[in-house]
Image 1 (cartoon, rainbow over the protein chains, first blue to last red):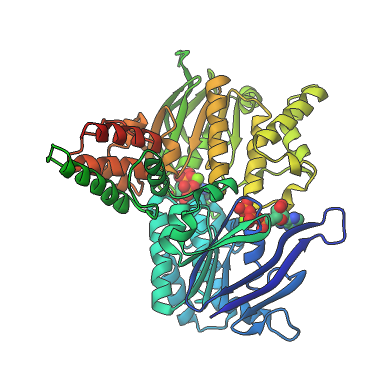
Image 2 (spheres, rainbow over the protein chains, first blue to last red; image 1 turned 90 degrees about the horizontal axis):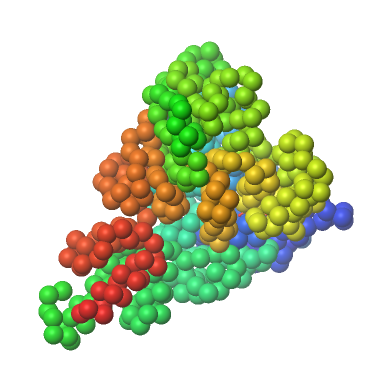
Length: 292
Length: 286
Ligand SMILES: Nc1ncnc2c1ncn2[C@@H]1O[C@H](COP(=O)(O)OP(=O)(O)OP(=O)(O)O)[C@@H](O)[C@H]1O
Ligand SMILES: Nc1ncnc2c1ncn2[C@@H]1O[C@H](COP(=O)(O)OP(=O)(O)OP(=O)(O)O)[C@@H](O)[C@H]1O
Ligand SMILES: [Mg+2]
Ligand SMILES: [Mg+2]
């Protein structure tokens, strides 16, 4: 489901001394089935932006269209928009409220008036997708560890089976394996159900691995946009606005400064290994020693 | 427990939460023993639900062991009369900064701890200003903490505990919501407090590149401590770590792969800069 954002501005507490423009003149189109990552320093407006995608925040000015419909128009049923566009908050605590983990995940599907059977099937699938032990289903969601809470919050949104998945820092607080699994899961869902995915992240390696396109925010505006490799090629600019590049990209940049002929567009350990071996082999061949 | 070096001693601690339903859950900590020396920087890593936050809350007496003891600077956390001293000695930054907001403005929030200590107003002022500057939040001194972004709240929570100058800092995933530069700045601040002010630091993190900065890494699994050692030693055990849902920093993985291709890289490469130096040396010998 495509999303079209036009001239979107949001001011918190408008007309008061506490007024703060959190995002300004945002124009962004997200294609159907695309995976877009939003990155930017603390306070740059990422959460504010994504909370507009399902009508949770109202634009101060500008429009948000989901599947061609302006979601803030009179007469639009925001509930159905929220079923189509599932949003997971940055802090799972803001989202969990039921007595048990099970009820929390079942909340959305029940609201959608699905049959008990369908609700059960969806809750089970969603909990499995985020790797939550069924033994935790009767526990209060507030009696979970930080990472477990995040998984349950994500399950609650997955269970609604939305066409657009919006995730605000979905892997923060997950253990390294959990982070990887979550990325795979998102990718799998995108492939199987042709979901449109928008996610916010501070993890450069992860956005590099998952996103088709990066959107870089700075002080409420979009300042860069493009495929990960193209964006990460501008390391200095990213650093200047509080971001960075994946560790392997940084390593390549430093090696280049030391006269190594390695490509800049390296994101992973695999690629770095190949690049370094290529240089050393080439030079070993030219030199007298041939043992590399 | 007489060892002066042992600033914090966790002695065979087990802990079970009692669920709202009244049912006792499986133990979250099982016979955990751990000693931290004054001035040490210890990182704790482990899978989700392995017991890290539960252990952290034992270090300032917020939770008390079901069995076993925790000693802080010679005081047993079970000892009612030391409770106040222990809270002053060990400053905590919780995993969710929302739980930590107590005041209507950012500066009042940061001043809350020092005020509680009964410090003179001028000193409170200077500590608050300094702490906010350290975390880059001076601009927001008068904002309401509730109106901050996720990462800004996290920075304010860190400022709050820095302003208290406790002898020991326990930080539960303090950088989970920070941008890369913010993460680096917070890590530098933590290292500086540890190095220059000899503040004992216990850092819980899922970022292995942060754990590498510690003197010692403690690995938890299912409520137990399963490994401890220097970062270089612990991160050598890549298969073990992966089996525990953990990982190694990309640089360490790269070093190990290059060694497997018989490049003569020295042991103990942990950072990008160390890798660059080692590779350049190697290349100059070709
Ligand atoms: N409820 C609110 N009231 C007033 N100002 C707010 C509110 N929420 C956010 N802000 C301000 O709006 C700006 C953008 O905040 P937002 O939460 O969108 O940032 P973010 O990019 O998500 O940051 P982070 O990476 O720290 O989560 C910040 O300056 C923040 O202080
Ligand atoms: N209030 C609570 N009541 C009951 N059980 C709890 C409570 N808090 C945590 N637990 C359980 O105790 C175990 C340890 O949780 P803890 O929060 O210490 O883990 P953690 O290592 O900090 O995990 P994370 O990396 O996800 O933050 C988990 O199995 C968790 O489900
Ligand atoms: Mg945010
Ligand atoms: Mg925790």
